[in-house]
Amino acid sequence: MKRSFVILIFLAVVLPGCLSAQKKDFGVGVILGEPAGVSLKKWFGEKIAIDGALAWSFANNGAFHLHADYLVHDFSLIQVKKGKLPVYFGIGTRIKNDKDITVSARLPFGISYLFEKAPIGIFFEFALLLDIIPGSKIWLNSGIGFRYYF
Image (tube, rainbow, N blue to C red; front, top):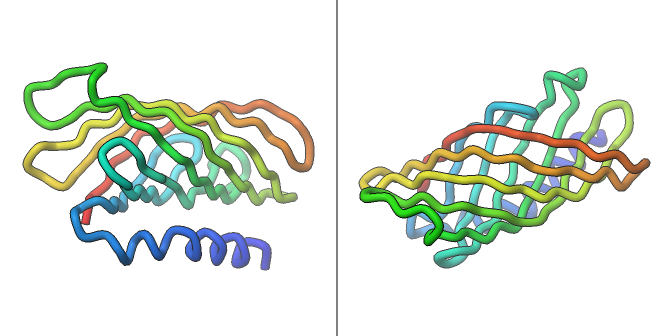
């Protein structure tokens, strides 16, 4: 019951952005790491995006993770001849459902490569997590993944 409620809330927030994507600014893909699962990203202009994931932690008894982040991208730090290679950082939240529901703040930092002629992006990120509910604890998540943009 708790998982269904969490999934419904996530879809209610993310789905409207998915339906309005027209400029190949909505990506769906996979994130591998801790946790691993489905990754989503919606661009709002040149530098701002919201990403999220529906994922499972194999290191934590299969706990279900749901996260969403507000991201700012800097395309000027690393110059490449083809494609784009932005560095990004942001702030977000995570809900984890293991034995209890845990709510955490997220501080993601990463790098992505956006291909010039294909609607594909690959990324690598770290996220510092601070559990807020039910208690305080600091975690580090990391992942590598790809997304196809529609």
